[in-house]
Length: 274
Length: 271
Image (cartoon, rainbow over all chains, first blue to last red; front, side, top):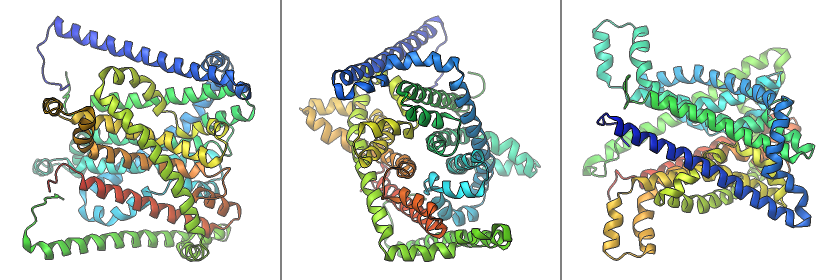
């Protein structure tokens, strides 16, 4: 599985194409099996008269409701609202987390002093900040962005610091010898070196933020994916509920895959041109 | 930072110094945090418009914590949350480790299950709450289900990753020596993957810790999340901050416990 230089040629690329097709095929079959098992569970629910109402949780009602909700624009609106909060929260987390991580990496004193405080703050379950956020911020949107930011900042801080600790100290000496100012040091040495780790931290932060987003939207807002789930449940539209659950899974999967692709791109095993 | 087991005999003074240093850093770091907190609240509550923020300060919080400890509120909340967390994690491990081993050993299973698992893994755990509440009669069971479904994925994938690291030759050797499938499991697989499984459980704990608090906001009348919601509704902000501190402290202790376990089972140490 290593990226060692392989003999080029049409045979190798053909093998790679076949493996790619196999993965796609397996992925497809896997999802079909998933839907089949889901449908089986729904049929079992339908057999028992006590649980017959829950048949609307099944895959067929869900797939039927999908185009309806899409046509009404409900999916797009929910995604846009949640996406804005996620995006803002992540941006703030990166804007705060990366500089702090770099300082942690560069200054041993700072790292030693701040470690226990950061570890403690990190382990405060993010939603525990919710009552405080609601009082501090007049708007619910701002409170949610705050919650996402405070949840996402920690993986980014620690991943950035870890990335910095991997940098060969000799590079700093060489850069200083060549007359690099602090700005140069930052843009030419530090940032390219830590890009891989920062992206790994962003992927973790995204995962955490994704968990925090939905419960944060269950209270007080009237838009977004979390709200859509609550709304569907309150109107007993179970097929709408499962549509939203699937949408959440798909978007989360999509975002995570982007991060994985970015991480591969900036991985040290690939240097520029493949 | 190396964990070399070959410490020299006269290392005690050095170890004492580094432990003392570590303790000093630990205490100083937290003290700085409290001081900054105190300064922040002093600044905010000095303005008459935001004077009510004074009850969010460290001194009211610590006083409330003492009072809540004496009345047993903290202990009962920790016990309620702890049992839900423990049950959820145990279920996640009981399901996640076997599936992870299957994923590691059987390639076709891994390839077929990858897509549905990746999809389900990225469904934000609290999205399952409406379904969980309908399926499970009691709120306690629903919360345990939420924790389990959130925690199972890190355990599963870490177990599978651990199995991928196992040298395939070990299996051949074991088979040659007449190992039955049970032996293979207990003598080869489980010791080899312990490190990765513990890492997965640590990650699962982190995820479960995030899910636990919002799951306890509604429907239950005990637990850490409920205590926060209760304090908020009663406008007892000092109690609220006290519970925030308790949550942070317990999370920190649990995570540190697993870090120690992981170090213990790390491959770099050969006792």
